Image (cartoon, rainbow, N blue to C red; front, top):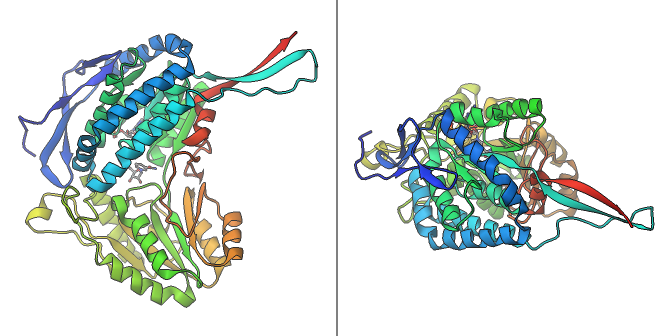
Length: 488
Ligand code: NDP
């Protein structure tokens, strides 16, 4: 990698100021489509920086909490407008920094705008309920109250949407935040924070610190001034968050991995199923926590489904996501690329059949990036690692089932329970699936990876801690309930 003299340096945002790390060290963020290109430099912060950010959030929490909810919502409307004005530039940065194609990056940024407007509207909605008291002379009601300072740690796969679906509800419900983004996508995150800053939020309400997860991330989750922590990322780090937060008795929320199944029954519309599996499995290069990674097909239609799936997968164009006509970008980083390659080899060693893809692309343009072709394994057994572990790449495992009962059993045979989908035209099959599938998102005749911002999002089993993000459900995490009793 060459040092760039033109790439911009992005700062931390602490107590309303854009500041360098106290040690003045920076780290380059590189383009996974071209590892010689530096997208920007970010601060390689040290513990003192994080300490300052946390103190600032703590210092601002009283006045922010006192401000009315409606007024806090007005700030979010402003942020939404600023993000919308800068949508193209931010989406382009996202594509350059983590590789997803430009149309997907634009879609994600537009989603960020919509999330902001949704939570801005929350400013005008009720913050409690009146409950009849058994004392007829009393008034009893609940009021939502902010938690205080929220620590926010996000991954690189949705560098605009995930930070916003955490920061926006945290703010509107009256909390201040310390936000540590994934290093892999920290330039994009800095541009999101610029939108919050330009909306004129009071100082200390949104604080932003970049740097290593194991240093400042760990310090953030252990910090005594935090009142709650929300995390999306790997199970490994999630467990650390759980341990640290529960030892201090603070609220925490974890969204982690998935090994999301799609069931294709003998009466399914196979063309629709193929389209959904390709979209769910390979968009964003398979780097979605809701990505389809296991496809369980009833024996009667297995061969015809696989034939169509392979035919369509071979049409996928892989390349730099900024280029027109490219459907799938590179893996987001060298380490993701190596992980995917490792699982491709593992699948072969385990005895699965690599039907198509899984090749590292080479040649002038491809040598500079982390490109791999979308892979489909057949003959996969439930116990294989490629059927059990989250790969987070463009790899689909095909499994056979003799009937629906067995298909659901296979689908549930995983530690995870984030998202699951079924393709069927039988009402009894879909009702059984809804009842028996252990997943937080259960989708019928639709891809596993769709999420709507106004609906609860989250998983079961090892995918989540059970609390939900987005929509009205976010209020449960970002507030506490006070039950008020007034005797007349
Ligand atoms: P991590 O869990 O390591 O990273 C997620 C976030 O946690 C990043 O901001 C990271 O910072 C931070 N972090 C890392 N270590 C610590 C720590 N000790 N204390 C506090 N914060 C920490 O995920 P990876 O990016 O390494 O991805 C690894 C795997 O995780 C993927 O292959 C995938 O399987 C899964 N994953 C799941 C996601 C989901 O949406 N459910 C999203 C991303 C990953 P930094 O970037 O500086 O390391």
